[in-house]
Image (cartoon, rainbow, N blue to C red):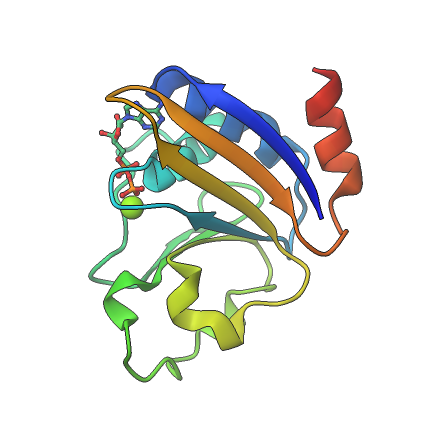
Length: 153
Ligand SMILES: Nc1ncnc2c1ncn2[C@@H]1O[C@H](COP(=O)(O)OP(=O)(O)O)[C@@H](O)[C@H]1O
Ligand SMILES: [Mg+2]
């Protein structure tokens, strides 16, 4: 397992990190966002979307489960599985995970059987009001180059 750890001092730094990482990802990639409520998972996704030119406010699709951003390139899918806790997860999300876009997943723990081996994890931990410890985790060795290029920056 490869990891890159960084301390983000504020939301803008988290968004900047997301903009760097999205540039290194490709269609079909799956990015898991882990951490408690308020850790910054949605902030990370909004930073990635903003860097792709998306101008509107990004909110977590907690009630819709899935939001599709067809207007950016590559297409971004944003899943928030929080509300699926202990429910039937057989609602057709497979089409969006490893589909024709990059897929971000908040609360992947609730759709574990749908998560492919090839994924990148962004783990966020709250240290103080504005500080977060962020770990970029390559659990299965698919993102060695990405982790290495973060290290040299
Ligand atoms: N360093 C930081 N990184 C990310 N968010 C931060 C940071 N510092 C403060 N925040 C704030 O914390 C909140 C995180 O909310 P959100 O991204 O919706 O979390 P989650 O999706 O994990 O529940 C936002 O209000 C954001 O502005
Ligand atoms: Mg969220």
